[in-house]
Length: 427
Image (cartoon, rainbow, N blue to C red):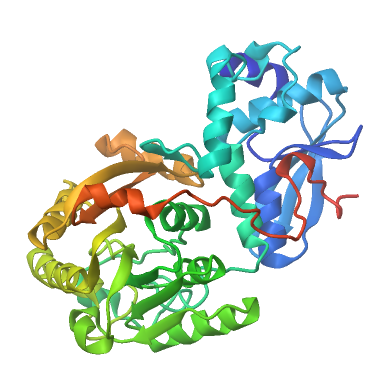
């Protein structure tokens, strides 16, 4: 069906604008991202394609996206938008017009909730924010819509890391660690933060994050009226986080230090452990002493990692949850190290048992560009998920005391739906 839609509409992978109604057919999220980062953009027409349509580029900073203009009636533009979102975006159920040729959209009847199950599905979303399934799909329209609501607050989880991740921080001697330059700055998902806090924390919980990194987990926690404490090795990261939190008018607590010494850095007990640990050498954040991402061998890394997990568990109250978001990493020969299982074992050794195991499916982003070479040469699959591991300490009967999940409207400000976004600067 996607082949049929390609023949009907051509390439929808860039930014495609319908000049008939001045709305985007595709590229909504990419234009939205450019506006968030640069504030504006320009469109340059460079020629025409074989169909006589204007083509060019959308340009902002150093980023360029292919651009195309079409002149389509609504009965053609609506399924074209669906086809574009099917290829890599998200879609909104209430925007669908079922009186169209589904073959031209890339969807089939199994993709569209038109039976009685949709009612139960919506009830779950209304009650629990997203359906509490073991697959958490961040590509879905309802997830992306809620994520945009969070980002309206001005949270920029990447701040403080642009100068810390190898590929951006040239002061790190990456050759010293036998690693190639990396251009990675992972940003935590605010919706996942909200879910973990709402689902697995009692009211007014004290949250401990032994691998704090950026600001996202702390700001979301405090905005939801939880008390967050994060341990971060880099002082400049802590300062960037605090500056951002002050602007948003919340007050998470970040402590500069090495989490191997966590019991001497903080006092008291906590109600939830929530973190995303370094995936050994996948990203290199600094060359400071205690930085796990530059430890010479994986076995040495695990010794320190297990120690931090164990000491964090000691600070956790009884009858409480912990959640680590992890992914596996490959060794130099290309085999997985089994980091997910090593994390599970670390918690079990510390006295906590695995209670839930979920998969977070993420947007593909630039993966289609990268995966072609790695799969063709080495048959390596492109990874579009992370593991959300949830552990419990205590008697499971006491979980009932956590009570009902409170689902609030997130942000009072209005924000633009991708399906309604118009490129205001396009002439």
